[in-house]
Image (cartoon, rainbow, N blue to C red; front, top):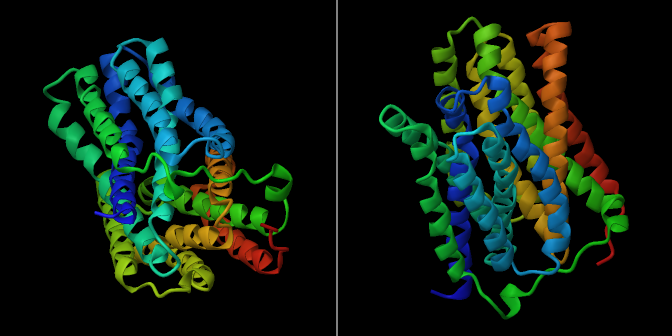
Length: 376
């Protein structure tokens, strides 16, 4: 297996595991609350702790990736992830706070999967492989509920979480496939903040961050919307949510084989508008409209990531790190805003905010087209 194929294999393994780490937190939360004798306010530290450190890791990665190879960077993040799992296995509130803070290392693991894939692709196959990479994220996200459902009734909460350490150790072995020296291991130069905060680099980061805000707010609040406003039970709304993710997976699978070279330059805007139209149809009472929205969501992040890599090959790690930090901040603000608007006005009004974010991302794409390119 040549170096590029090893890089692609490693990227797929990393994102599959990162999706598992990301999505096991939800099923674990009620186990920790009940099993460790915590209220939900205390147990929520498992969530807010990782959000806080995700911002710091995103900003810090701008510097780390300019100094270390992806192999060394990924191993550093895996060390943090391993310690997070060990801390989660200690049935005390302080240990859960520490675990939540360390769990933010998964932000770096997920980001590293994109960076490793970029090393193993070129302009001809990058967009299709990016779509396949994020299909694996969707598949990895489906595994934690099944794992917790199979173990929660038989094991104590700490015994449910501690085996996750085996997955961390498995990823350490996967990093051995990454080159330790040579061209593929050379750290990327750091883009100065003065350059990232102006012109096309800033537009590229904001397009990604604002788009992700719209997509994730839709996902995180869809069950609440369908059960609170759409008249469905939580069980039925959750089933609809699963169907939505099947449509997203289908479009990513299609993209892995059918996205043409160059589509990253023109396809994101029509897909965003299609997602807005689907969400509007869903909010009008046709729940199937959300299926259209998720089908459109599928390829957008891979397309935006591919374009970022093509436009800023030299500084891609710096800009992706900045984008991940910006996403985390915007998501925190977005969740607070939806909650406040729901309380002040209605859930129907609040659920229009994700669509407005997607329209804002389309507007940012127009600015991106006119913005001054970076000098590299």
